[in-house]
Every structure is written in C-alpha cells, then in structure tokens.
Length: 67
Image 1 (spheres, rainbow, N blue to C red):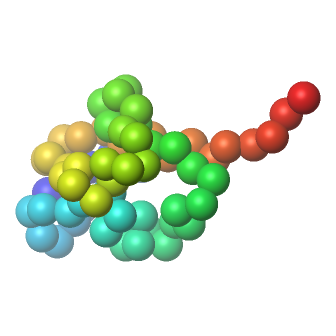
Image 2: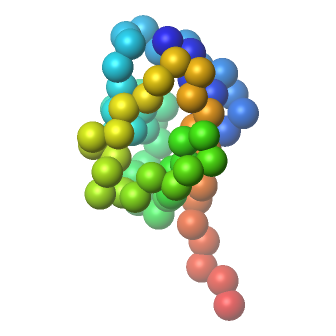
C-alpha cells in the first residue's frame, strides 16, 4: 500500500494500518500533533479505529504555542 505523509511517499508492507500504527512505524511522537487524511482532520479519539487506504494523503502537524 502506498500513502503520502507530509509530501513523502511511503510504501507500507501490509494493507491495513491505523493512525497509531503509522505513527509508530514512522517513529513519530503522538503528543502535540494533529493528523489530517485527505485534508480532513481526524480527532485523536479516532486514531485507533481510523485505517488508511491506498493513495491516502496524510498530513501530520506539530502544534506549537503562540501568543
């Protein structure tokens, strides 16, 4: 399966990954980030049940404090 994460193409070995598994595979910390799939933000409470599909465009955003 092929997905794009932050404009980088990744070929995944198996056909079903949820967002938690993807973050682990890419060694990304779950704290302080937001995720969108195909420009739709996925609430953190849904990361476990949200599975990726071939061709998905995933954006991982790091939240920063501002003022």
